[in-house]
Structure formats: C-alpha cells, structure tokens
Image 1: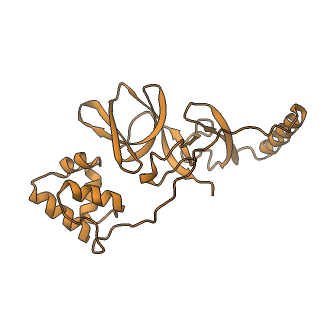
Image 2 (image 1 turned 180 degrees about the horizontal axis):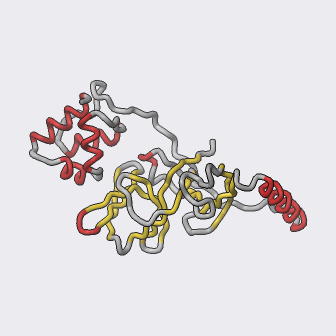
Image 3 (image 1 turned 30 degrees about the vertical axis):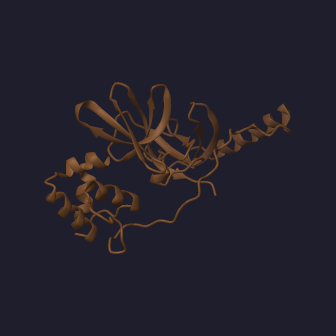
Length: 232
C-alpha cells in the first residue's frame, strides 16, 4: 500500500465510508478508489486533492504523498475550421485527389484515410492511420473516426483543444473511460461513470471538476476513445 493509499484508507474508515460512497462523492469509480488505496494506481495531483478534500484531510498534497505531479500546460487556442487552399483550381484539386487515390490503392489493407469529425458532425479532414490485422485499434477501418476536441473542457484529463481522439464504435457506457456521446443534440467527449438507476455521469475537468448526469435514454454512446493524436 502506498503512503497516499494508506492516508485515504485511514481517513475513509474514520468517516465510516465505503469505497463506493467515496467514489461517488469524488466522481470516480469504486474500482479506482480501491486501486489507489492498494497502491496499484498512481493518481494525479488534482485527483488526490479532490479525494482528500472530500475526506476532510488538511494539506492534502505534500511532498510526502506519492502523487504524480505534472507541469502546467498552457491553454491552446480554439482550433479553426479546415479550409482547402483557395489558390488551387478545380483541375488541380482533381489531379491531386486522383494521385492520392492511386497511392492509397497501392497501400490497400495497410493504411486508411480515417475522417476527422468536428463537434457538429462534419468531416473536416482525414488522417492516414495504419491497419493492423484488418483492424484499427480493434475497430473496423470503415467505422473508426477521429474526433477533434473543440475546447479545453478535458484539460484535467490531459486532452486539449485541437487534439484528435481516435474513436472506435461502442454502444454502451464504460466506467472511467473517455467516450464520444450525443446529449441533447450535441456531440462531445466526456469521461463516463455509470450510476445507480440507469443514470450516467458525464465528467469534464477544465480548471475544476464538473459533471452532468443523464439517463441511458437521453445519453447516446457513439464510441470509445482509444488513442490521442496531438499536433505539435
């Protein structure tokens, strides 16, 4: 057991709380709390502060706690829509497309032009992605997509505006995983947590942790985010 895990377990037992009850108050899964207490998982500085604050432990983050400290990351500017170069004539665009298609045909079964989708559902670009044993990260090549993150609502999970998240099809919510969902007509990526009564908590983390709770009837799960692509 780590020092941080021992601190959390001692404080939790002192308050006569279960791992599940603590997880709900912190917006984390019961399995996550158990892994932290047993020392199997190292948490971020923000997660440690959130857990210990709920338990009422003073000075929750210190050099004595084995917390993964990370440097501050500057906010990225809001990405602009992809626009084809205006100087290209229709004939030039057609020639370039034909050359690209011929090259991709030669590499058929090796790489795939995976579409990049904006939050409004429009395809704004494509990314060449390797195909391994007929799959892309376990998904059918013609079903996967990249979702371009529109803002910094996931910066607490190390995902920033402009990042691309490779997403494979999924129909059910999974705990503690970033997933592409549609909620009230809006597509977005959120970290999900299944709650009792068929409810789903959709977590965001900009400068502070926030969450929206919906039901399995109004939260449509579209895909599971499996890879992060960041352009430097």
